[in-house]
Length: 330
Ligand SMILES: Cc1cc2nc3c(=O)[nH]c(=O)nc-3n(C[C@H](O)[C@H](O)[C@H](O)COP(=O)(O)OP(=O)(O)OC[C@H]3O[C@@H](n4cnc5c(N)ncnc54)[C@H](O)[C@@H]3O)c2cc1C
Image (cartoon, rainbow, N blue to C red; front, side, top):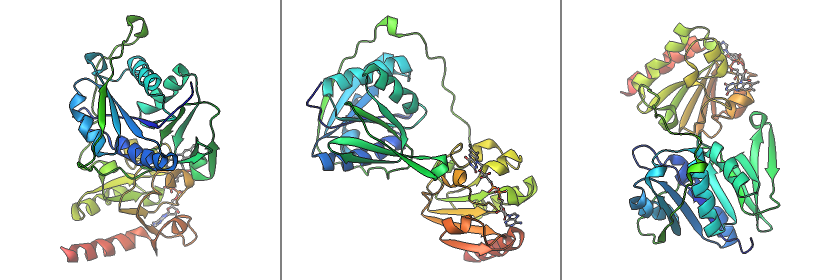
């Protein structure tokens, strides 16, 4: 195919029928590429009962929305969604296709690339246009190296690491077009079936949504020491406790609190890094934080190179004094 044009974003929705944060982030990335190319941004909106959300996609930056609305797409199945994305892509003939590096996107992207017989760059953190083609960058070894990927064929496909871009803000004054695409999923395409969906139960505010994160490392020394961090969340609104891998592996807390390349990726306004060394694998999950405040007894700890504010000292002395100050503010 030739005459490729524009950027196609594959939207993802929550079970409540809203766009996932990854979709707004992809639309920011797509807007930057579209500006460099002077080409449009389109969105593929796939699901059951999704037609009415086309305006939301336009408000977030889509010039055109391709709606694939059918009960067969009620729940994500790799086989059905691959057929839908490939069929939309064949119709749109985009230069670039962007997906979130989410649990669904990291599976869907490669299978779409196979179907369209093209290449893919996964888990990318920045995107540029070089000679009319995508150049996608991703970080390796917890941020120690960067790898740039170019593409010999169109469409150029990339999945984008969460929080690499700020989410686009909706602008209801924007206008755009909507087109319904009917996709045929042959019964022979279906080798799996949807059984059930279970939401993870989490108490309090989700780590990804917290404005302030209090992260404890191995230097907390014990589960009792680590549990003391929850006193912060009682005093600071929209805050949550997190851990390093070493703290989770030491069973100070569950694995679900872990931040890093094998844990969650967060970008809060304030990240307290307490009794943790600042290993690259950990920083890969929190370096997007607006402010990092380190507390560590070792003045040579790497975390002081990564933080805007730091206190050298034993957390057992620093934290009570800090909490006393916080209580005064009430
Ligand atoms: C493939 C791979 C993937 C990984 N993925 C992740 C990941 O996703 N997330 C992650 O976190 N790690 C990950 N790691 C592990 C990572 O390399 C580090 O080992 C880990 O982050 C270290 O955790 P830590 O900083 O809590 O512990 P340490 O490195 O042991 O640091 C403890 C710190 O606490 C300080 N300290 C001790 N006592 C006190 C005290 N009383 N008061 C103040 N400070 C004190 C010490 O000075 C020290 O700096 C991964 C490693 C590999 C190889």
